[in-house]
Length: 160
Image (cartoon, rainbow, N blue to C red):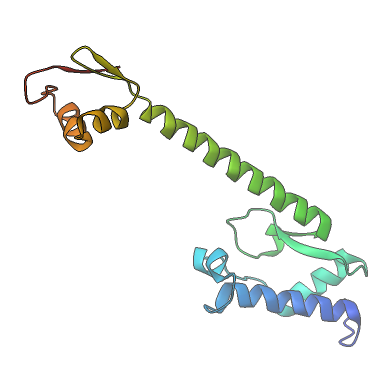
């Protein structure tokens, strides 16, 4: 392939390759934990990468390298060029997925906290409420965990 060390496309390709190496090999790099810290390596020689980049970019400078398998290494068969805009959109979609999952996890945790507690004649909507009323939330939780669900005076603790 044509290698023009002074051309803009060559400099862009070389800079991209240096960035890949830095993220994967230099422990003090800002994003090392996302790349080298996860075991991702650069398995392409500089010359092969620059040839590939020049060939695929067709002279355009607004492309970025994207790994097809996000957990895979930087290898010729695992990278592609995409526009900056597409890369930003891809990151936004991934962030939305992560937020959706964390929201679902929060909802599940809140559902677990909504356990109803009945102590004697009194009905409480949560363990926290029962604990505040009796001033012994930890005691009530321990009594429920052990199968001896009774208050010190013998009153039963019921949950649903």
